Amino acid sequence: MKRIFVLLLSGVLFTFAASQIHRSFLLNDYSAVTSVEKVEILIEPGDTGNLIAQKLYEKGVIKATKVFYKIALNDRRAKSISPGIHEIDLKISANSALTQLLDIKRNRGAFGFNEGLRKAEILDLLYKSKLVTGKLSSFLKPGAKYKTDNLEGFLFPAQYSFAPGTTVDNAITQMIDRFNIAAKKSKIDIGLNNFSPYELVIIASILQAEGDPQDFTKIARVIYNRLKVGMPLQMNTTVEYAANLRGKIRLPYKHLDINSRYNTYKFRGLPPGPIGNPGEAALNAAVNPALGDWLYFVTVKPQETRFTKSYEEFVIWANEFKANEKAGLFK
Image (cartoon, rainbow, N blue to C red; front, side):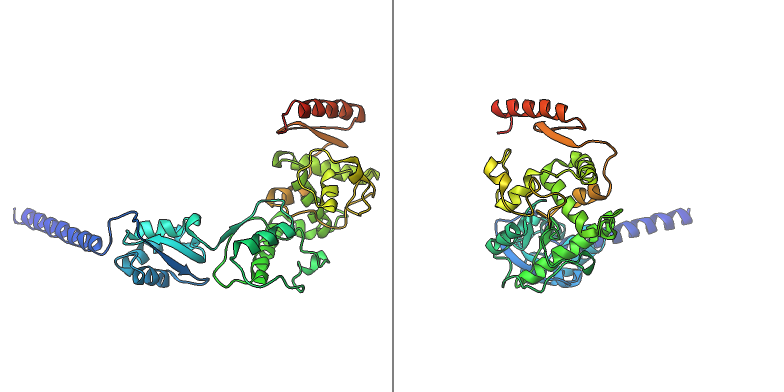
């Protein structure tokens, strides 16, 4: 009986102690999830969880540093807190503060761009964003293995976070570094058969511009097949690049005679450089083309691209495309 009493007493004391700890934890944390009052928190590269907690506390976001630090220490997402100026609500729970720090929409230093944008377009977006300072230097280059000074094709499309004071050179360097990671993962950096790493980047950029991701590997095979038989690539997107055009379903005939090495109607082989900045799927497709004997492809309607070896079949499909275009399917 005495033993049972001791056990019961121990249980009561444990429950009381746990309750006190829990209450103490709550007393050191706000309960609110959001607030109408907000404050800006500057997160810089290299900031530790402890330092971030201190910044949140000093600005009045959280009630105690140790609560946020403990939560961040046990939440893998905390490692994804990005540099920049974050707009965070005042007097909220530590967990809510972490959630808001991870919300990219609250980060004024966030910058991202889609696959296929050209270098000039990316720089224009950067300058307009006012996230960076200075101008692009001439000494920045891709890796030595690509044997080029041309940055086109090496600015990897992704979401970036720039701390205040980031220079354009630093921002572009981050994009090149991110490209190198993707290039190594896809093995585009070691070449394929007789194609150099740089030629593969050129091919990937064409894939990105020419089709939808589900067709990249087939378009890659068309490119390789045409190059093998000495057939001109005849890609509208390379001519668009030469003429500084965008999104033309059909090019005016006058552009097909433009005197540029990027005019793949007029000049055989690959253009002299990439025509945009490809994403991961296009890089992978360039080194993993589908099996097939196709020489032609045509998108007869949105999300439906057909491939064939027969020129006669290609002409039939091209006429079907024209009919669908006339009917407004591509608007």
